[in-house]
Length: 185
Image 1: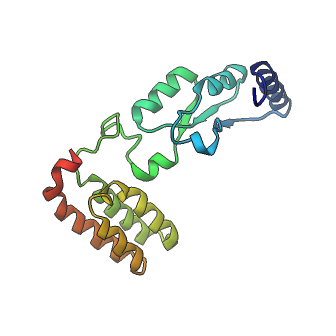
Image 2: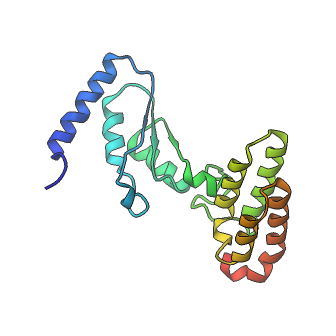
């Protein structure tokens, strides 16, 4: 048997919670860590987050495996946390917490990622953003499109990273989406 026993882990966690109380912590962010090899395969353990929340009288934010609005609602209900955070999923779906969108994160239309990208690029022009960050966000937003349009990804990798390039790519993909509608439905 590898790793600490459940009793040891529980005692260890409880000891840390008592220490947090002594230090008068005002808020706590939880992110149950999983081995890197299983992070994509296994959901975060909301039982751990719930246990932490149950022992503290301060705001606790859950962070882990919030993939769509329905997950956020389930996590809040189950753990009793005061809020949730999401990182990776927000990069691929910036409308994650929108009540106006599907609770399961399904786009309203196939062009939605491109439309969000165009809106994001407008913001990048208004509020200067380092190109390396813009590039990373573009790749996250358009990731599902690259299996249908691998030449677009290659072109983006070969050309100089500019907002104009990404705007052109988004508009091109919007024009092509109707021809590939079955992929996006």
